Each structure stands twice: as C-alpha cells, then as structure tokens.
Length: 534
Image (tube, rainbow, N blue to C red; front, top):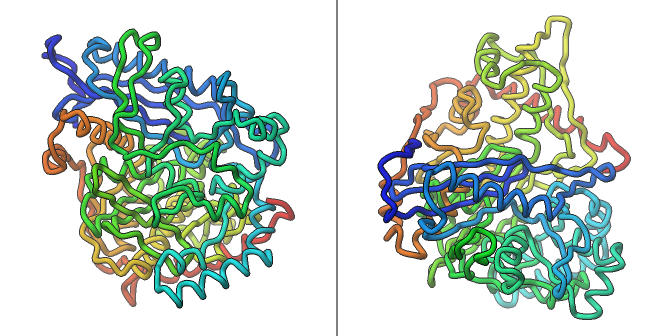
C-alpha cells in the first residue's frame, strides 16, 4: 500500500484513522485504495512516578491526538472537510477517571503495563473468596453445561486487567471516592476519554472490543459483569455505554478541527490489527510483534472457553455480526530490542538480522526478556510471574555481541512458538492463514525462525501499521466508503511470504532448535521469583 499524494481533486474524500499505541500516536489519511495520503506521528511520554508504576498524562495525550490529526491532513494536501469519517484504535486496558461536570481527571492514565495492583492480584487469586467463586461456578457449569460458567471457574486476575487497578484507584484516590459517592465520576479507557473530549463531553461510550479487553466485561452476555463489579466493589454507574464497533458515535466538535468529522469506529488495537489484516474467517491468525507480542485467532461467532484460564475477547461487532477472538500475549518484545540498542549491542536495528546470521548459533546463550516480570497471558500459571527477572544465561568467554543479539531475537521467536502451541492445543481450530505485523516483524531473522518453529507459512504485509488500517476500514464501512469485507480483501498487499525451511522446525523430531528451545524454557524457570517485590 504505497504512499501517493498527487492527483486529488477537492471533491474526493478520505478516511482518517488514529492509533494511540504504547510509544506513539499515529494518524494516517487513507484513500479508497487504502493508500496512505498523509501521515503524522508523535511520541507518547510514559511517566514512572514509582517503581512498577506506569502512567500517561491525559492532557498531553489529548493534545498529541489533535496534533497528529491536523498534521496528517496537512501532510495529505487535503482539507478537513474532505475527511468523510474518523476511526480510532487505542492501546487496551489503560484507563483514567474524571468528573462528569468539569471533565477534570482525578489521576493520570494508569497504563496496562502498570504493576501497582500486583499484590492485590496475588492476594485475590489465592483468596478463599476466589476459591469459593471457582467452586460455585464449577457446580453451575455441571448443572447447566453453559460455557460461561466454565470460563468463570477458571478465570484469574492479572495486573493487565483494568479490574484491580481500578479497585486500587478507588481505594487510594480520595477525590475519586468522593466523586463516586456524589455520582459525578466517569470511567474510561483511552478511546472513551478521546471520544468524550472530541464531543465536548456529550458522549460517554466505548465499543465491544475495548470493553471486552478490560477484564470486567462479560463476553458471553455482552455486557458489563455485574457479578465481578459487585465482587470487587466497582460501581457500574461510572462505566461507559457499549456500542457496536462500527457505530455513529457522534461528530467531533467543529471548534477542534474547523469542521465536524463523523466518528464511526472505536476499536482496541489488537482487534483493529486483526481487522486490518483481513483475518475475517474462523481459523485466521495474526501475530503482532511490537512493544509486546500478541497472537490472536478468529474463533468465529462463538466465544472460546479456555482451560488455561483465557477469557474470550470480542473482535468486533458490526451490525448483528459478532466475531470473537482468543488471544495470547507476552510482554517486552520491542522493549528487549530497544534495551539492546541502548546498551550499544548494535547501533541500528537493521543490523540485528545480519548480526544474528553471522554466527551459526547463540553459543549456548539464552535470553529471558522479563523486564516487567513474566507476563505471558495464555500460558499456564507457572509462567506468569511478576517477580521474574530479565537475564542472559550461559555466557562464556567466547560469547560475542552477535551471540547476544541472536539470543535476544531467538527469545522472541521462542515465545511465538509457545503461544502458538497453546493456541493449537486450546482452540483445536484448523489454521487457515497466519499474518504478522508490528515493527518487530520487519526483522527477517525473527520472521524466518518463527516460520520454521511453527512449521507454517507466514505472510508479512507491505504496510505494518495494521491497527490504523483496521480502524480506517471499520470507519469507512460505516459510511459506505468501502462496501464490503470482500472489497477490503482485494486491497490487501503482502511484502513477503515466509516458508518453513526443512529440518529447522521445533516440531520435527530432529529439529535443530529442539534442544535450544528446551534450554531457553529452563532459563525461564530459573529467572522466576528473583525479586522480592514485583
């Protein structure tokens, strides 16, 4: 999907899409061929007020949002009045709360990476209350055979969920507690906050994909979980109304961009990337390798109940159609590469591919990328340890920078292998296709090794910003800019198809990586319980 900016007339229109990621806010202007006509990016500032706490300034984020929209339209050479719709994709489970009357926030955005509720998570998961809940839900499942009770009997809290971080805020932010008592408090993830600001406070809403990513939404009943909110003393009154992913959420106030722009899509970033990759069919898989690794499989129109404790996500709801996903994720993917660059293992990320290939193996070195603990949701409980440490293991006098770089890149592919194996075991859904995106997928070594380990072909798109494209696609469908998902599939372009190389796959009995993968898994175990505090 190339970038072209010529040949426009004033009558032509485009779709705006903004993606608010963990490290940047990006806006693209798309034409009907899904070409990018204009772009603008602004870095996101993360705040670390205390160890383990990660925040964002709501006002800074809002100003950044406005800046990139104006910048992208200016870059396209078009006018705001030619923007037919706006779609918004956002990082998930990052939230704030604010006063309904003044719009003033009670605290900064608390990031999905934040670990302030880690001790509450541990306490709740080991509590008698949770054991009782699990027991009751198992009985209900036996009596009713309803899968939602089976899911509830297996679910555990994680620091990534909004639930206990919100419970922490309600306990520790006095103004917030007072506003809840007075009925003037509103809660929202980033999409809800931006929508509230864009409409000058007239709309307090989210969509099903964002709601289902909070950990306080019942994806079986398609509503906020009254039971969970009651269990954790979270007031339902502060939660936003949930709409379809493709919906007329209102228009931006004319004072912001000069003209009102219809807001027709709100979408969680991984679900948006799934849509941008055109993974519309059951069995389609997407691997996003960015700040973290996210592996999603389309499970069709039924939520998947995981015996590993994974709660199903809503991919999107368009009209009456609901598409569900099952997702595994692991933190620290892009963080590991960025750290390696900062300590000068290499100067340019593009060097890592040639460095890794310059040696035949990692010389027995294993890298554990646990900069914020082992957060591998969808892996079994022993591999979810917020007290795990990042580490190189197996260092020798013969170890070189190239060996270290190769070990880092291998660790990313190994986690892809772990996630994929659990996905196959859990869902038992035949794999139709696999597509990869995110900044890390530009690394050919990681892509080829992942392909070999999975033993499957993996397609890499020509355009890596799939979250933005997915939000644009959904927003465009809402206003008739594109007519159908079949039309969207025809716009899809691939940069390269990676094919497994014989003899290298970890699934082969004589696979050369089988012992290396086993050593790496042992290194994971040894890195656990290193810190006394998360």
